[in-house]
Image (cartoon, rainbow, N blue to C red):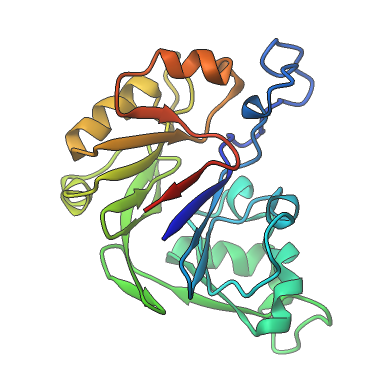
Length: 253
């Protein structure tokens, strides 16, 4: 199984529009971050985790093959705004989208032309599945455990697959959620910036502490702002077992 980071940036991406800081002006491709998304692949299955406004360009380098499932973490624009761009994949059949009730309700509101009795011609054919936290689901040969975490006051979903877990936009987690992560060896988790507390995101030091509570052997930090600094220099500040992810990074799981 292979995970590709399609995007590792926060809601505004990096470079940040209108910003003239040195990181945003960097020519190092590791410092350029599209909105957060990931692609999980086996020999038989392709699963997209989130589908933000950059998804068209994020998927362009990959072979044009079916996407078996789209796992959504939550309804915020930077995680769902690219769903309409999946229309070309409908040549393979309906697109199966998995989300919690709040996200599903939001999609029906923001994309009503996909969920009426008379579908707008050319609209993506979406098969929307409402899933519950801590209730496993299976996509082909892959068993997935949705885990609820809190994004400020908004309940959102993280996903565990075997000894791997993908978490973005988390601020807090319940003991039940933490227990569901026991045994995870490879962890992906958000880490917005180094300092200045945020109402709905954890920072780098929070992510390090959280990964140690989970017991992960290797942790990759994502959903990053330009305040992280230059990629190579920022990685030197992290302890062993931690790494800032970058767009295009692939993990063998």
